[in-house]
Length: 84
Image 1: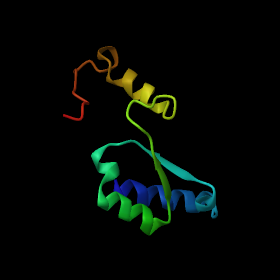
Image 2: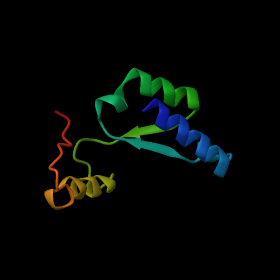
Image 3: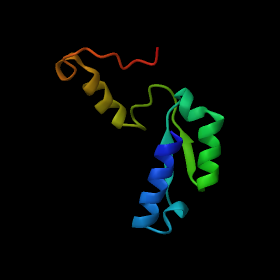
Image 4: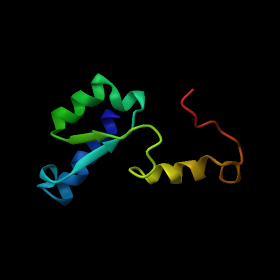
């Protein structure tokens, strides 16, 4: 997660210098989103974050896309994408 956030910050810095003043990163309750390492990285990079509740599809419509990707017809090898 740290590597992704660092990459994202560099990318946004290149596109829009003042993005930190009007951008909020939305994360769900995944353990790696809630970790001290992730929270420290967000703070170090000056990123604001909000955490959505469980099954908050209204707030995170991309979760619906992930649900489609996880379906068998798009996942012919039936790879597991669960948090177990």
